Image (cartoon, rainbow, N blue to C red):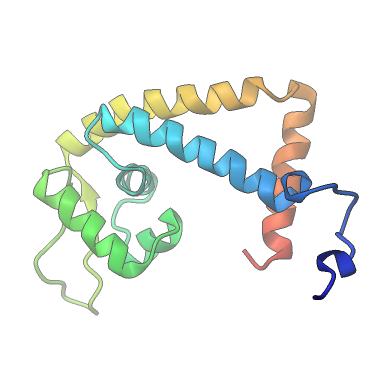
Length: 153
């Protein structure tokens, strides 16, 4: 049997729970769980909320652009958009004059739902931020961006 520890970890770590990737995943899972719970009270999923936020910032985004921004596949975004459209939170034309992209826009009802849900999501982010000393927050954000960039993201 081959020794599992024949490859040295990239930094001192006694077990998997001390690896950066594990800790990032743990934080992401905690964030996702808190957001799932909070958004359920507003009748939204995390991808739906992300889609509404993106459309508030950039009205008219296409399915592909929304999928990239929400970190889901285009197929998954199709399902998200259909659900938001059925709930009358977004509008999209049935056809478009150019290309295949159907630009999406928030409806008044969508903007209202987003505003209510945003308060809950921002409260969760505030909880996370309070766990980091203010003087280190900027560096943490820079480090997270650097890690993503190092992996091509």
